[in-house]
Amino acid sequence: MKLRQKRKLVTYLNILDQPVRFNPFVFSRTFLLWAFLGLVGGMTAGIYWIVLQFLTHELAFFTGWQVIPLMGISGLLAGLTIHFIGDPGEIHLIVNNIRFNKGKLNPKNNPSMILSSLLCVASGGSLGPEAPLVQVTGSTGTWIGKLFRLKGEELRSLSIAGMASGFTALFGAPLGGSLFALEILHHKHAVEYYKAIIPAFVSSCFSYLVFALIIHLGLGPIWDLSSYEYSGVFDFGYAVLFAMIGAFFGWVFIFVTKFFKTLFERRPLPIYIKTLIGGIMLGIIAYYLPITRYFGHHEISRLLTSDYSLSVLFLVLAFKIIAISVTVTSGWRGGFIIPLFFVGATLGLIAHQLFPEIKLNLAIVSCMAAINACVTRTPMSTTILLATLTGFGHFIPILFASLTGYFLAPRIPFIGSQMERE
Image 1: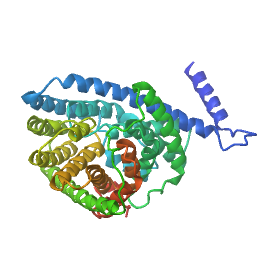
Image 2 (image 1 turned 135 degrees about the horizontal axis):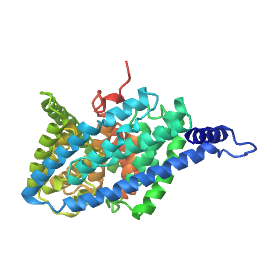
Image 3 (image 1 turned 90 degrees about the vertical axis):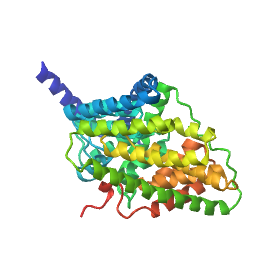
């Protein structure tokens, strides 16, 4: 019976491999493949988000001193999951596999990534769900590509399209998500994998559609900075100035992360011990500064609508950078894009309190753009993402800030696999 089923599957695949005859359009069977991948990616992201929101709501019951043992235990459980089920790797590994492993992302460690990242993000770690989603949906693209016997650039393109579908579902920006999946791979040549652009666009659109249907996602900005009004070319100069501040703190984040990486690697400890130590450190920070807990999706809105003093904002800035660095280096799983946006928003608020005459929204969005572009080397997608997420009506100041952060970034990228292979 199994042999007969296998023969039928081979027959169906052979039929699908045949070109569509008498088709006068660009449309082809590959479009259906990209669309199907987007539907799968959107469904995966929707289910992941629902589970994440449920766990976050349940674990939010623990407050005050209780967050210290909670995050310590969550870190321990996440570490044990990685230790026994398998290490899913981090964004460095994803980029490395796309660039140097023929675009193949291994799906075998997806259960470990899903379980560990849910624990890490829901309990309050300073990393977001974008990296786990990119890993899971990207490897799904690889699996589907192998099922349809794709090779070379076609397989790589489908993996990138899968990454784009996962990223887009979370951020609700099909164009920004697609470009991010391309830009994150190489810090010099954003369109090195230009063949993947259209697959990424198609997959992202279908992914966003399904994700929006599942969680009833609206089309409005997540963080409302739409009240900005353009007042002349000097706004571009201010955007560059704020971006220089953001880029400086991008450097600070990179050096703090390297410092904690050195500490955690000083002795060869099991992964679950590292995640336990990291969880306790994060719990202590969250106990004294509760707004630094979680990855920043809701916390940025709270930050923008609250009236924090200048001294509190400086504390939040310093300890949020430390919290992100500890989360990254202690083995917790997640992505650092939204947490970096949180740091940028805090910087913008500090700049406004120091110089009240400056435009608050311009300062915030410029700092957010610069610090992310400095760390991730993604100026184009950062610009589009922030314009979508904030409702900031003027595209050009964000672009100026993103490019400033990009060109003031360290020569050696934070994501080491973005470098040219010697």
